[in-house]
Each structure stands twice: as C-alpha cells, then as structure tokens.
Length: 229
Length: 36
Image 1 (cartoon, one colour):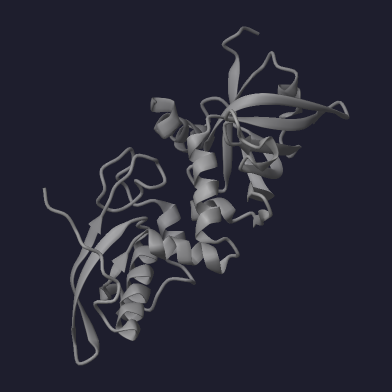
Image 2 (cartoon, rainbow over the protein chains, first blue to last red; image 1 turned 60 degrees about the horizontal axis):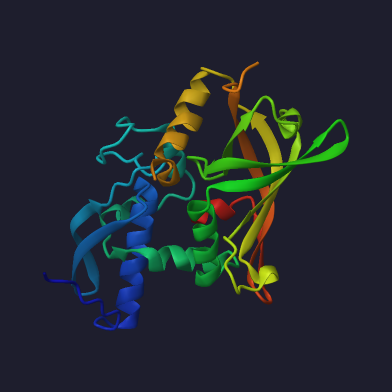
C-alpha cells in the first residue's frame, strides 16, 4: 500500500501560513472538522482547486455539514451561527490549504491549552465511559457514578441517571454539579498522577419525548463511540 | 418507579480543571469542550 509523506517545509513559511489561515477560515465557515483542500498559487494569489474533501464522522455535531451522510442532512441552524460575525470575508471562501489536527492544536494553544493537554482532555472525555458526579440533595452532598457522553454541541455532557439513585434527586434544573473523570488506574501507577479532569456547571433535565431531547440528547447518546463498543 | 426509570440530563460546563500529571494542570473555561 502507498502512503502520504507529510513535509511542512516544502513551502516557504509565509506561503504555508497563508494557506493554513485560508483553510481554517474556509472550514470554520462551513463547519468542517477535518477537510483537505488543494490550491494553486500564482503570483502570490491563491486559487482553490478542490475544496471539499471533508471527513464525515459519526457524531451528530460532526455530521452537520451540507454533504456528509449522517442522521441530519438538512442545513442546521448551528451552521448559520458559525457563519455570523466571525465568518470570513467572502473572498476567502475560495481559499485553500490543509486543515488537520495541527490547526486544532493551534486553536487550543491560543486558548491556553497545549497539544498535550488537549490530547489528555480528549482521551478522558472520549475514552472513559463513566464519571463521578457530585450534587446537592436537600443541602447535603451526594455523589454517584454515571455513564456519560459529550453533548452534540460540545458545551457540556449528557448523563444517564436512574430515578432510584439518591444523587438523581440533586439533578434539578439549574442545580450545581461537580464532575470528575479520571484515567483508569493501573498497577504500579502513581495514583495521584492519574490524568483527570474536573468540570462544574449547572444541570438541565431533558424532558421525555420533547423535541429538544430527540434532536440533541438521544442522537448524541446513540452516536457516542463508547456506546457502540 | 421501576429500574427502567432512567432519564437523560445535560451538564452544562461552566469551568473546570485538567490535570495531566505532575505539575501539569490547566484551567478550563466554558468553551473547553469545543476544542475536542
């Protein structure tokens, strides 16, 4: 089988950076997570050749593109939000370059999270299946273990809780939570050095059969790779 | 109420903290999961 040889130094740095910037803007405008773009450059001007080679993935959020197959084929409202004020000037829509994990890592680094931290966070939230959730029940702390998935809009988590569990009484709309996800313990590992993430915020209960639940929570849950494993 | 009385809940993230090992910690804001 053949393969690709990736060489970031084949182009002058300024040209490469400009191509990357144009590719990022193009992909952000269309909501692509991963896309390969081809371009030609003449006299410093970029000409897009083949701009839509995006990779569809299985989650609901990542299937929300115009052409990718998936649960939703319509143009979502979230995509129009992505094109609002931060969207690129129209002349960039024909820009080209290459967008890959390196670009995401750069965005994360700008937000104070380096590549290693982003990898750790991704491994924890997509590799682990349960979290420890702390809530308040009648003013007292209650903690439980719940299966979880990252929500489709990547603004939070979705958890599945039994009505019989004590901690579920603390899952009320607007109620506070504190959650812990940690890497699996291994023999010989230093327990206090296990990678972990704590998250806090507020709870919202999905109403059964409500349109918002069907649209957001359940597809997210079913699409979670960990649920299919 | 039965054992099948499970519900879905959304946990809206406001902040957090990631610890990757010794002396490696990052504060997270509400946009942290968008970078996944």
